[in-house]
Image 1 (cartoon, rainbow, N blue to C red):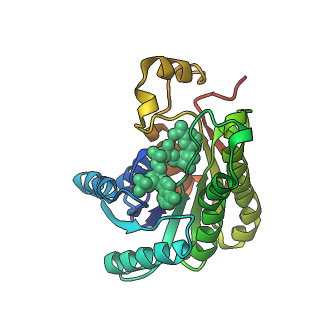
Image 2: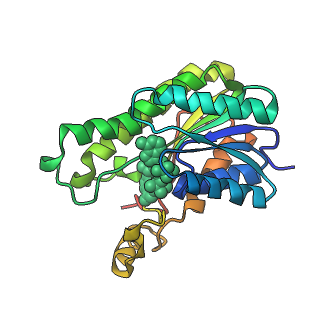
Length: 255
Ligand code: NAP
């Protein structure tokens, strides 16, 4: 019996990277996981395959976030999957992980209104309305976990708008903590540092070395490093902590 046996979880953006590792980790502890994706169905199926190979249970849910109708589509798929696998529509764990960033090296002077609106739509607006919609499904004692970024703590002008979206997400954590507490639901933030999500930039040795130096441990984060923190917050043991931020930067903010 895992720590999350009998629980259900939605991990947005779990076709790849941190979301995939989180889905795998939650499922290893016994949760039935809804593996959400936007564009990459094959990758989402691979996440489900990894979970099933481990003896876990999962299903995919498709919805591009940041476009009209996104929340309806997400919950349509989620509710159908929950009903099919459990016979009811109850959610214990919501991980708002899906996110987009700008290509590195975009100076603030060059960010367009469209880019700004898109980042806010996916990284801040969608998690708010997903959480709002999830309120009716979330069980008492449930968990909401928002994936932010260490960039809310250190200045990087080329990621100013991205960091602004994550700052907004962290406010969701703070204010909903008060709102959800009467039901015993906790909501917390996890702030990853640079984490190797398999994208091309992480394959360049000199860039890897430079990025690794940002961690006190002198290595890049692995998606599993973040997933372990999320899985702890999802567990019973973390029930006395809400409205908090968990550093998962590998000591990247120590100065
Ligand atoms: P990733 O490898 O790029 O994966 C992003 C995931 O989000 C994918 O599953 C993708 O789905 C989904 N997604 C992206 N845009 C979406 C949209 N518009 N609608 C629905 N789903 C969408 O990302 P990651 O690096 O693991 O990052 C995960 C989270 O951690 C993000 O919130 C990110 O801001 C945060 N973070 C990452 C790092 C890092 O260094 N990696 C550092 C700090 C914070 P598809 O595959 O279907 O496109």
